[in-house]
Image (cartoon, rainbow, N blue to C red; front, side, top):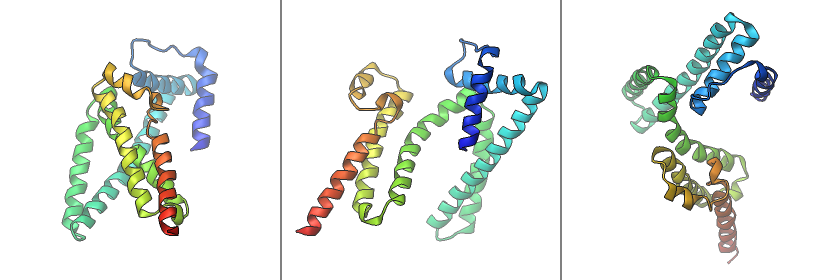
Length: 203
């Protein structure tokens, strides 16, 4: 992935002078348009087809993973019911097809609030699972995830219902301008809960 992203950055820098960006497009549409134009500039008319195939394959593998994981999760909730697995898989596929009919900008608008909710918690869970267990007790998990969730709410609300009042409040939270307002609070709570837990253990 590192090589891929470095390649995209290098390609964008190399062809930046040859590509015109439509300023009337939204930021997300500009990114999509930029990627398409880079492909065409680098590979000619064939670039558009290659890009389409690559995106289709990337989306397909991601979709298979998400559908399988979600279906397996619900299967576990319903006592390993195969029927629950099948129903969830079918519903997920149908939902994906319906959403796929929307234009790129609409999909981004729908997806970003969910990503702003899921990504912080996912990142925190991955990090907590990767450190020694003595620093990641059940209490640490509970409080860090809770704080992460609470401090990610302004990002979600700010995207769905932009408000100057909300902006004036969250601007005091470090990194909130980059949708990382949850990072410092989660880290502070991680340290504090570990200190409290250690003090309780020594008493």
